[in-house]
Image (cartoon, rainbow, N blue to C red; front, side, top):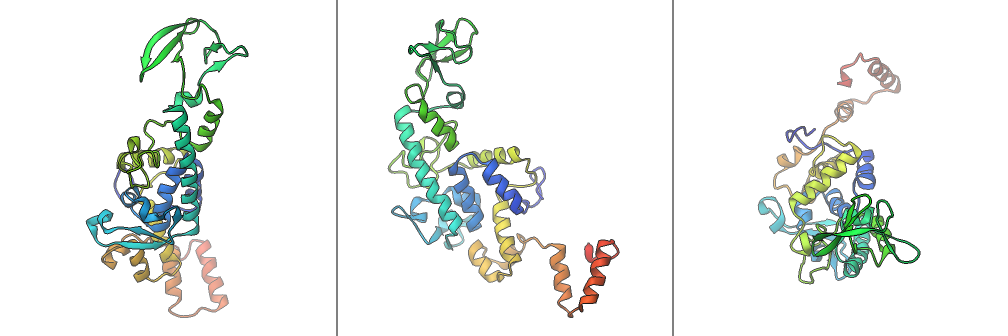
Length: 306
């Protein structure tokens, strides 16, 4: 387990994975990013740098995800991984929601968390009210990002004269539902028509940065109190699950992209029960012998439990 940046990334349980994706992550872009790591055993750097063409043929998801040599560690080799049905579903949702978010962005411009949490209040006569105390007396208070700020004379609260969702309050509900609480640092897909990356970076340019991906991961772990994990946990978990299922190492190696089996083997976690099961294969045990050993294990009297 990884502690203070040392040690191997934790192998995640099914329960931890479920919590991470449903409770830890807030928007579909982030779920799809880590779903790629989860279902293709990719490194986070590889997932961040994937281009739309590596995943989609037009608007159809390819049967295989291509991880080109140029973005792999040490540029070892291009690999292709069959698209898991769950990953396909995740990517389809990402594209659908990305189109919705881009339309909202074109209508309201950028928004921040303050816009989604507070916004503005309008009374039945169309008069602007202070979002905090609902009074109507204001003074000007400079500008923020080129927009006029107002200050409530009653409570001193400062707010934009015309917030992002002022004319489209129903879109604020949609944005909250889609989980994008701050558009300033969100990479909108298709915002820049010439950007080929699946996960665009700041302002729709380039690809998502390592820092942004790491912060997203850290925030998700904090929300669900997950310790000892890193972005590499998805790769280790995927490869270990394959090994546990009895998939031959050569097949796993083709998916992971490791040039040497000894490097792959460092990733795979070996559980005590697997070692025990392997030893049991040396000679078949009768039912009464198995029962005898299991009783010893539960009583803490056997070395098999180590």
